[in-house]
Amino acid sequence: MDSPQKVVDHQPFCLSLKCFVKTLRLVVTVASMIFFIVAQAPEPYIVITGFEVTIILFLIALYMCSLDKTMRSFFWPLLVFGFLTVICTVADCALMCQKLRFRPHGPYQNRSATDVDDS
Image (cartoon, rainbow, N blue to C red):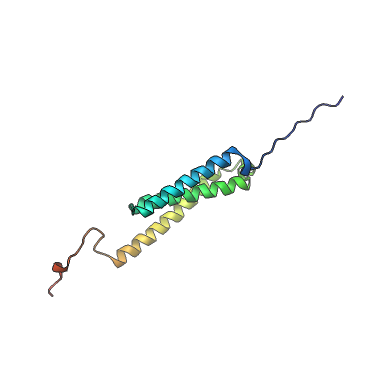
């Protein structure tokens, strides 16, 4: 008598509940980023939301390629999020230096037409 063989139930990521939840989270995050942009919220809100959108897109790509199953011994979130943090830090530093170069008096010091130097 033959022993029953195990049936491997391998469902693709695109058809799983996990994909639906992650896609729904991505939609909600993109909508909140659009609302922040339309409402002209402070820049850190928009940047942090954009960073979260990037992370979610990256994780969905990793799950679709099933890299989470092949890289079991490697702690990839530390590498991925560390790399993205370094990129965002360098970009923020470059933008801050550019903003200070063009407007060295600061963003909160508004000059009116009556404050013109008489020199």
